[in-house]
Image (tube, rainbow, N blue to C red; front, side):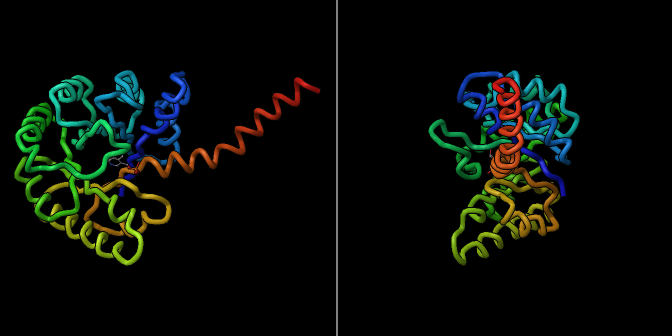
Length: 239
Ligand code: PXP
C-alpha cells in the first residue's frame, strides 16, 4: 500500500511568520527519504498554507507521485493543467473551515465536478474524488467519470466508543464497491499512528494520504535534536 504524505502544515508553520522556513519542499524531500511514495499539497483558494510557488517547486523537484488537492473551480483547473501533477484530488472547500470537513457533495456539485474531471482527465491527468464512505457516493463518482476515489476516514478516525467499528465497516464497504466498479481506491483524513492499521488492512485500498499526524510526530521527534544543536552553539560562544 502506498503512503502519500501531505506537507500542508509545514507551510502552515511557515505562514505563521511569513518567513522562508520551514519549507514544504525540503520537508517533502525528507518524507521521500523516509519512504513516502507520494507528496500531497492542497492549494486552497485563500492560499493559507501552500502557495503557487510551492506547487511548482514540488512538481519540479520531487520525484514521487504528486497529488494536487484542490476545489473543482475553473481557477484551480487552470493551475492543474499548467502544473500537470500526477494526480488531482477534488475536495470541497469552505473558507472558514480548519480542514476539509467532509467528502464532496456529488449531487450539488455535479456539473462543476463533471466539468473539472473531463477537462483534467482529458489532458491525461487522473482525477480522484474525495468522498464520504457511502456506497451511493462511490457509484456517483464512477458515473461522473473519475478514475479514482479517496474515501474520507475522518469519521472513523474521530469516532469515540463503539461507533468506530461501524465507521470502519462503512469505509471497507465503500472501498469494496469502488474496486468492484473498477475505480482505484485511496483513503485518508485523520489517520494517525494508532488508527492507521485497520484501514491499511483493507485490501482494496491502493494508498493512504496522511498529513497532520506525521507533521506532529516530526515536530516531537526533531525537537530534541534542534534544541541540542542550538544549545551547543550558544554554549560554544558564551563560554
Ligand atoms: N485527504 C484529504 C482529501 C485531505 O483534505 C486531507 C487533509 O488536508 C488529508 C487527506 C490528510 O488528512 P490529515 O492531515 O488529517 O492526515
